[in-house]
Every structure is written in C-alpha cells, then in structure tokens.
Length: 493
Image (cartoon, rainbow, N blue to C red; front, side, top):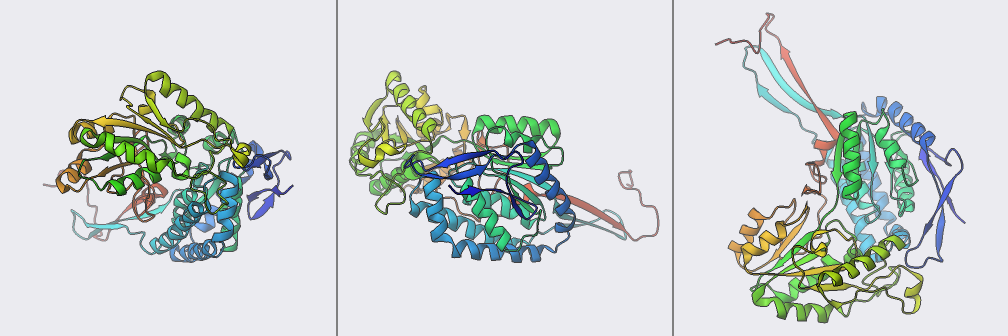
C-alpha cells in the first residue's frame, strides 16, 4: 500500500499522530490508491508557522522572479500531463479526456499568473495640493488558507494557489479528501519548480481540519471552493475573525433553448453541460428551460441522443460518463430521483444505479432526465451534483429568463438562439456571474473572471486579472515635497 505524506516547510512528513485515511477509486471500490496523512491541529499549526516565517522573505522576492518559478511549474504540469490525468481519473472518476483539460487549465493559469507578475499595476493620481504626489500599489496579504473540492483537483487549486504565490503570499493548502493524490502532485510540481520551503504547504485530511485552518489566528485569508452550506459556515468564521474571504460555492445553472436555436448544437451543449464530469460541476447544466413551441420536439431529440452515452471507468478510452465520487453522492442521486417522482416530474431516462458488469464495482448512476419539472419542485431549486437534468417549459423568452432567475444560486447560465436581440436581452437580464450564448453552462477560460452571485459567492472573482483583487491589499502613498505643512481634509477653498 502506497503511503502519502504532508508537505510542510519543504519536507514530506507524516501526520503528527501517525493517522491515515484511504483513498478509493470510485469506478472500482476494490482499487485502493493508498493511505494518506490524516492531519490534525498540530499539523495545521506546523504548516501555518512555516508559511508565516516564509512570508517574511517570499514577499520581498521581485514579482517577476516569482513569475519565473510559476512559468517553470507550468512547464512541469505540461510534461506530466498524461501521467497526472490518469492519476486524477483514478481517484475522482471523470474520464481522462476531461482530466487532461483539468491539467491544461493549470498550465494556462501558471503561464498567465507568471505574466501578471509583471503587471501588478498600481495607480497614480494628481494631488489636490502643490508639490505633492499620490500613488498606490498592491502588496501581499500574508498566509493564505486554500480549501478546494474534488471535481477539479488540479485546475481549481491552480486558480487560487498560483495567483496567491504570484502576488507574494504564502499558502497552506488542503485538497479534498476525495482527491488528495492530486494535491500531492501539486506539491511535487511546485517543489521541482523551485518554490522555497515554507512558501507552499500541503495538509492532507478530512472532516474538521478545514475549520482548523480557517480558525487559525495566523492565517490571513481563506479561499474556498465547495458547497454553499460549508461556505456560509466558513464565511461566518472569517467575518468573526476579520479575515479576507473568497467563497466559490454552489450552482443550479440553466440552459435556455429558443425555437430558432440550432437544435443539434443545443443538444450537444446540454448533454456536455449536464453529464460532463458526471454532473459534478458547480457550473453543470442541471436545468434545461425550453420554449413551448419546441418543447416536445427538443425533448425527443435529446432523449434519443442521451441514450447513447457510455458509462464506464474514466481510464477506458470509450467512456463518456464516469462514476459519481463516492457512495454518499450515489445515494444523493437515488434520493433525488425518488423526490422527483413523488413531486410529479416525469422520468424519461435513467433514474437508477448502473450495475451491469464492472459497473457494479463502482458508484455509477445512469444519466437521468426528468421533464415537466415546475419551479416549485426541489429538482428545480436544489443543487444535486450528479447526472440529473430537470427540464421545464417556458411560455416566452421573458418567462424563460424569469425561470432561470428563480433560483438561490447565480453562477452560470446559457441561451441558445440565432436572434441577436434575444441573446442580448438574456445577457442583460439573467442573474448570474457567467452567461454563455450558444454554448453550454460549462467551459470557463483561465484568463477571464469566474464566479457568481446570490448563494454562489461573496463577490470575489477567480481567474483573469480579477483574482489579484483577492490576493492583494492596496497601499496608498502620499509624498509631499513642498517643505510646508499642507492640510488635507481641511476646507482650503
């Protein structure tokens, strides 16, 4: 049995009390990946202390020099892409063609963050007084606690970790308990790229360990990706302890289809959006809103194509849909299928565990479609995080947008139409951080802002230039060379 350790202050070390937990392949529960360090408070204290000490020197490294290391990390991610993709698939399930894309996100983010180290611009402005200059610049926050989910175990951490390091912060990182091996790989790559000891620290574990990082008095910032319920709890702690906090949480994203849409394109979009990553994306298309004039026709075409999706281990080249991540998530899908039937939605596809052949060894749930879902049903309102699509009829574009906005979340959205006026109305009126026109609700690009509104986030955006708003503070500087006392904020007029 392979054993995987924490990475603290440049060294690979076991958890202080020697405890471990097992990581299991969700496509085959007989395949145990290894034993992983089960960290507790003492481990957290050691990692935070290392990060705090390293911050004193790391923040003074010229930003472009930090960028050189991140660029090298991108090169290493690229070199190890094939290997890492299979490691990621084995531990969290999605097909290799998807995990390769996950790693490409990290490559893109590494190169982008490296470039931005030469563009951490401040602002200058004229003073209201003579012989005085006003300027401002960014500086790092300090020790960043970063906590991420299982579904994008390399890409999402890269969105947080790499910009944090680029800005001069140090990091204590806790990956998901369901994808710890990917966290180990991330640490290996940053170590090889030359990130100094203590600047990046990896803590493996589960349960309350995330809270230990959030509560720690020497952690200055929390960046979290995960469920809305947990995010709200972490946000309360950060509010009480006055930490900077970035929350990227749940979604219940809708794709709107208008009668003039390219149906083949819209069907491909909803199948990819709903069943890619087995529906386990915060941006997944979990709702489909179809105009009444094409409702029945579109559903018939959708069902016909959805029936051809192939389930299997993500390590098999022909697989299109992998397993859900663990038994609890499988049970969640089973429970929501029961809820949908009880509420009166019509099940037209799937709705049960897949148990044929080798599928019986894993947590496979058949791609599932409910139609005639109404806005008062739980299927319409609640995030499931599985391969379950809810279909709702709209009377008009305005009604479709109203249905889209009838939601506690506001991450991603989509509309398929050839009418430019309808497209721009949707872009204007949909309540979401992201809107796609003629493409699915998934597919964010590394150089653009990512995040949502309402129950999805707390106002920050990852990705692109906006991520540096999270990982930096502003300092304003006034330089007076008048050689006299000039009194600002006094009525000088």
